[in-house]
Amino acid sequence: MSSAKSASETPRSYKLFIDGKWVDAESGKTFTTPNPATGATLAEVAEGDKADIDKAVVAARTALEGKWSKVSARDRGRMMYKLAQLIEARIGDLAALETADNGKPIKETTYVDLPQVVENFEYFAGWATKIEGETIPVPGQMFNYTLREPVGVCGQIIPWNFPLLMAAWKLAPALAAGNTVVLKPAEQTPVGAMELGSLIQEAGFPDGVVNIVPGYGETAGAALASHPGIDKVAFTGSTEVGKLIARAASDNLTKVSLELGGKAPNIVFADADIEQAVSGAMMGIFFNQGQVCCAGSRLFLDASVKDEFLDRFKERAGRVKVGDPMDASTQMGPQVSEEQLNRIKGYVDIARGEGASVLAGGCPPQLEGDFQKGFFFQPTIFGEVKNSMRVAQEEIFGPVVSIISFDGEEDLIKQANEVVYGLSAGIWTKDITRAHRFARAIKAGTVWINTYNMFNAASPFGGYKQSGYGREMGKHALEMYTQVKSVWVDLSGKPIGWYGN
Ligand code: ADP
Image 1 (cartoon, rainbow, N blue to C red):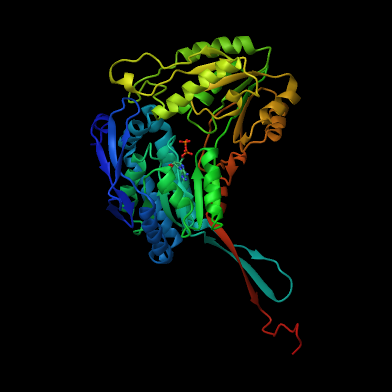
Image 2 (cartoon, helix red, strand yellow):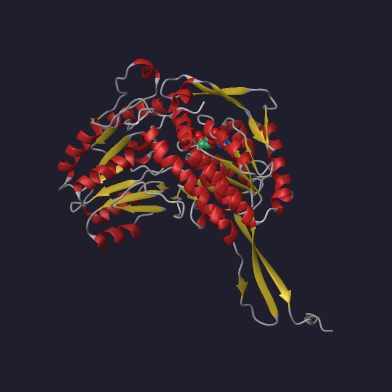
């Protein structure tokens, strides 16, 4: 069952992973997850809900206060390295499963998603032994130091666009810092996380340190976010659901970190290397079928290069190979679900209604055989878009880019920042002063200069404004998974004296 072929053809079945055991849902319910390229059933999965979340939270608490608290930092790191190695040894078949579950091309899962999963576990494995407190130079005969302790039981709710990678972004810093976890994968793409459950067991983590409960957002997800037994909830997904999570967590004042939507400006100045900028614009919007929270979905073009840029961009967009995601030469697979496909189609109608033109794509491609049942869409370019239009303001989450004009740098920065989101931005120019001026002026958590969609486990990622709060990856992620305790010690050996003797 390890080839790409079997991954796409043999229905699998998964139970919940709670306290180191594979168990049915308390309700006995299951749900199926389709292969979005063909609509065929990929797997039948136990459907967790509140009762199962309750069990998983108890298991995570017991592990936190029991076995896991006795594991040294070094051993935590070693288990994480082991997990990274186990994943690396299975990149081929995990990539094929991820492609079958999500629809993203096998080239991406094999060379981007899975290697980055390994990188994140390795990077944070190294941190396990480097999480330290400080001594503070307080006055008098006092000794003051800090302990950096785990937050506790973490509820982690992840989306479907990078299923395994989002699991790694969440699990790796949490485990390095000594927390325990209840992870809820997205209902559209539970398979990768369930496979991870077996590898976590094999890597030697004590039972209950990681619990994985697939299920629907409104049931399992909502039960986790509002659970009084968790200390922190970490969420990646839409801004709309992020607000629900923050509200649900607020009753218990559970700590929250959110990585939400985006509507990134990607800006091409007259002095940019046009070929470089065109390929960057493609990477910005067509990668992962545009289902990327930091997608460069608003493309601002300087008037003097607009025609040349668009000629090349349209031609290149028309040549993107859309089809069988298991084919190594495919550049775009299907969208994750029919719901997402319909959402994108709806935005094409909205764009036309708002007066934008469709310069490329705008509809599904003509495919053959089983792929006719898949959720494919063509690379799509909207021309004559105003920044105030809905297609420029709302996250579409598809291979759909809006072309917007600007009049000078001041107007550009105003328009670029005129959205509720602030996750990322791109700029294409050879003028280094302008590039760095822009990097400061844009309200976003990541700015790419003459590149796009670059990530590394050591570099922080997260949002300004309604794109969320908290930073994932890098040492900043450890801030979200630790809490600081200040310890005071009297060194004088004398009574405090404030009330006399
Ligand atoms: P998208 O809009 O990209 O499908 P969502 O934000 O809806 O993403 O979903 C991301 C994750 O949040 C998924 O795991 C989903 O099940 C979960 N989710 C959805 N609704 C809720 C909710 N009300 N409470 C908690 N989790 C939810």
